[in-house]
Length: 324
Image 1: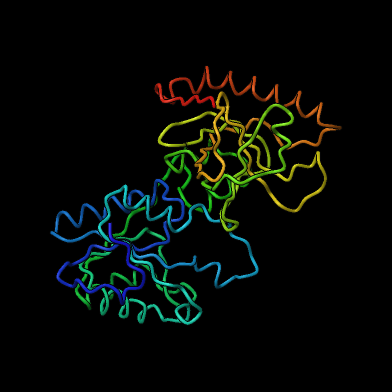
Image 2: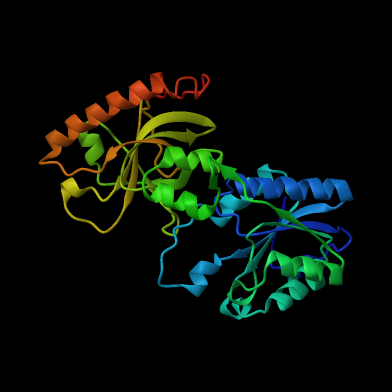
């Protein structure tokens, strides 16, 4: 996949495009339907498949004092789109100036003059232009004027709920990572470099890998989760704690630390991806470290029961155990 920052950088006008429009935060089941459709139209019409994304997320420019909590970073979107077989990913920097474009100017500037699209694929609720006043109806109208076809993907539902990024954000923020995985089509995951922590986990006998995660990304509700970490193409079960470590004093900062079960290697300065499989308990404040250690022992017992039961076979022999 070719990643192009700014449509002005696209010079290969010999390649006509089937283009998907949207933010694609989380690349959930509904997004995947849009990508399937754009790939199908590209193959059917002999076009190149492409996705157009505004970055940063428009919400962050239009409502700078509100916190959204993104499901995926731009590199994670690019990785997902490449894995799905998209040819081009266009990333246009979103600014206040662009936010003032009328819907017609947005279509003419980007879709017609710059990209010369032949097929457009959007979700049923896609909006664009100033104050989001442009609709799928407008796209169809201007498609007839400028010579591109518009394909509208209907709502994707699961258990009578419409799949959306906002629904998934709500589930994750309430710690319901199992339910969120149903709508994502995969486990919710976070990626970060392993950095040095305060070393308390090692003193307790349960060393942890502390992840440095982009502060704009959404984290699950504070608590303890059964997780599955990825390292060197191997998977390691673990206990992930999300929270501010209340036992050791108040803190505004939220930490993500993972105890990698049955693993004894050094992972400092490495990048780990952890998938949140299920929630084990809420974050708790303990009288002292001894009580905390007893609770960790109980958490690990629950984790092993889950691994032996519900998550048995998840790794298919890919469990990594290292000693150093």
